[in-house]
Amino acid sequence: MKVQIYGKNITVTPAIADKIETKLNFLEKYFIIDDDVTAHVVVRVYPLGQKIEVTIPTKVAVLRAEVTNEDLYAAIDLVIDKLEDQIRRQKTRLSRKGKDKLALAFIDEDVAEDEYEDEEVVRTKTIAPDLMDVDEAIMRMEMLGHSFFIYTDNETEDVAVVYKRDNGGYGCIETE
Image (cartoon, rainbow, N blue to C red; front, side, top):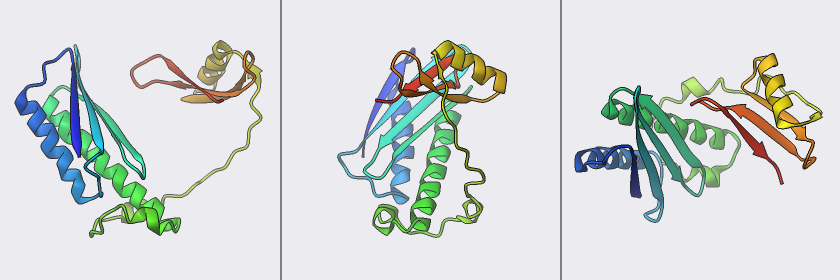
């Protein structure tokens, strides 16, 4: 796996790059990752902490995690923990759904998967998205206290989703 590290408001030193590459290569014990896969890592410095974002696009799934912490090296460790957790959950889901060919992308090992065995869909809800603009959708989402809201955009008449972003503000996903 290749690793591309980008620094925003920070110079990525050889020590930081080495730590990130070493930790990311540790993931190869869980997941078969081709040599042509590139892990994209963004390291940012904010006044209140340091943020690391890791995205690894593989044939089976896109692994993505981000962590903000006061200590950059602690953030690196935490983001690797999140990625390991995602890999375990994906492996469990694929093996449960009988997608053995996809599950072969994972390396067999004795990982404690008991914590994910109770994972199931607990509620299914059907909605009819109302016709509205993005501002009204945000207002309704806030009134409901939800982190996202599905609606039909009145300009495009397509289904869209508005959501709260972790770093503040809102995002909108539109369908084609």
